[in-house]
Length: 250
View (cartoon, rainbow, N blue to C red):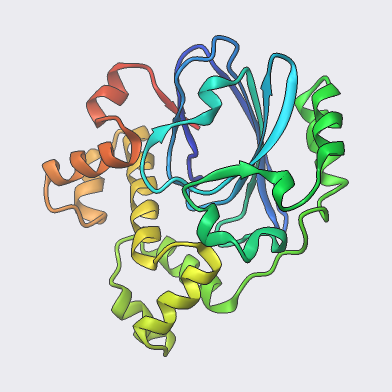
């Protein structure tokens, strides 16, 4: 299942290329010439956005949102994005992951990539930008995945975000405190918060497939009101407004 990062309207364009890569999950590009409203959806991943404004490009490091909010992309004409794999933070940024989550800042604070900003700005196509980045995939350091974190990310995904942290810690053979500590050091948020993101991503998948009954039965929502409340908290939309107003999750 593909985790969504944005909810866009009818006047934007979107394209992506998914990767089989240790560090990078996919590259994507949003065209937003009318600078219409775009929503950021929590995806539990770290992204880098190359943003265009009046023809100039600058790169921002983007931590996962923790709840739905208007996206920085709304104020820009184009966004070329790099989405890193779930549970993976490039080593250049890892020591500051707690600050990065739910935040954004210039990439150049951590690594001077001015030369990349200028090169990407001048390229004429999405494919050209992707090839350029793949040739420089070592710029942000190696994939440093903590074993415990990797197991937790996989287990949360397998259970669709519907799990008890105490049971997870017991299955791993560690205390709940230690399990949460390791996860937070590597992901920047507690397991419960990450699980909530995974669960709403599963709900988005169900909404797109028109499988509302599946959501209540499988994802642990108490009732329809609970689901609608959570969906709106994470996306700023209700399921009904999503169906009616031509929004698209990407």
